[in-house]
Amino acid sequence: QDIVRSVFWADADDSDGTSRRGLMTPTTFTPDAGAQTMIPAWVNGKLTPVEKLAAHRQGLRHKAVSVFVVANGHLLIQRRAAGKYHTPGLWANTCCTHPQWNEASAACASRRLTEELGITGLTLSPRPAIEYRADVGGGMIEHEVAEIRPTDQALTIQPNPEEVQATRWAELSSLTSEIEARPDIFTPWLRIYLRDHHARIFGNADNVATAR
Image 1 (cartoon, rainbow, N blue to C red):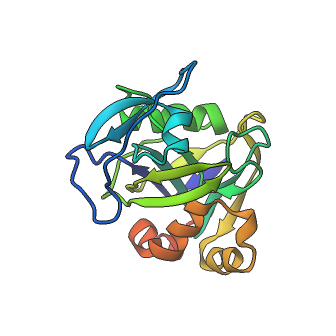
Image 2 (cartoon, rainbow, N blue to C red):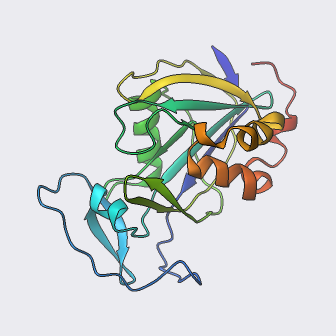
């Protein structure tokens, strides 16, 4: 078991619909045939249930959740499974996902931590949101946001091979340099988080001295 010093989660919950210059533009939404997983996305400024792949193919701004588990100055990162619908085999933060329509963000974060990594029982709570837009390949766009908070808890990791190829504890003080040297092995959103929002997300978490 590892003692988790900080658990952060990022919630794309801009429910007030506030427009951001250069990010919020009128969109014509075309639903895909055979729609299954519906996620909350903004269509012409209105939060709407949209099929997940359609939201990404059309670059719609949508709700999302990112989780950052930090212990002793190390961030738990995961390598995405080869079968993921975008960015397969790339390293990402602890967990990144989308709430289903009418699913609370905190419930989504807990559910996906369990489904992807076998992690249960963590207390998750949000901080102010971060918005980003990134090309993730395959004709798809991620247009998401993020939040953060800490806890001290025991952690057991049991990755689901259908979701996660591998996990490791990456030292926060050197992860940015590692990403700069090998950006091709990391997801676009992790590169953005570490490059543009490191202090906002992690604060002094990389200086924590508790043993894992």
